[in-house]
Image (cartoon, helix red, strand yellow):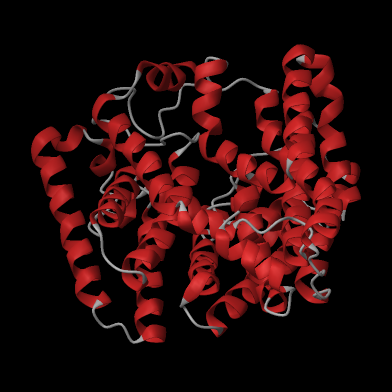
Length: 445
């Protein structure tokens, strides 16, 4: 498994050293140091980097810079974690490897191979190199996590979910109210008008990431985990406050699929657990979001980009640009089927994972990704919603829903998605793992 991640990183290592040698070597050296110290810590740092990479790039490089080596940091961290984890696990933890789950792991590796073939045969552009390497890394990370080759950090994520949510949602709300100069400057530099104007109260928040979509997805991941702790582990101010801020931040991002996915997860949790007290909670959340919308509208009127396009209204579907773009994407399916290897990953992204892969990599990639998503959902909803497995099963279902409106494996945050899906897919086998591994996961070490 390590060779695949190594190949993914090697695809980008060449131009990294040529274009930005000093910063590139510093980043790679830091990643090597972290990986040499502790494979599990490398995974944690990779997740932290994914959550803050947009903000880091705005602060360190003045905004979005083409061929920015900062984008490669989480890739190298996961690579080093994978390579270091095997010796670390055998020598110090005594973990047994999970049994080989042929179907999902084979599908993930097959998708990565399809991406490589399409790049060689169809698209050799520099943009295609990065996206291809990123998709191959996501596929390898998913397979590695399912196989047990990447340390399982779910216990740590679950225990720290409220703090993650507090930081991410808090910065998003601050961004909406004040819009820090580095965020406003980045919007002007890249002419980012699709999320509003570079002015407070007139922007869809993108937080510490690079656009509202990935930001809403990452916030929602920690929101689901925090909600799970709030409902099944007991109420508390330090658990309720981040959840409230999290829903507000997702709302201010204007990403409707995230809200739909969250309410769907609440419905699944109610049905499978019998906790009917979640119903009034869901009603209260919906009422609170409606109140927030009315307050924003009364304060800033139609100038707020969250509401100016009637994103939360059914009255203007005929002029909804987001909906019309998705309908245009469906119309392109027929022509895409005639391209067996697609048009390449170097082009514009589509707001749907399967359809994006259909256009970019061809019908085979679309079939593979569809089967993979179906298996993830089936595995996730087949068990209980209680415990660590249940919490991340709900997160996996949410991510499957979110993939309907985002090419989630073709962005840097897709590495996070791949890890979660991989850990969830391998969870059935992990119940038979050594007691040392169970204790390790429970402790969040």
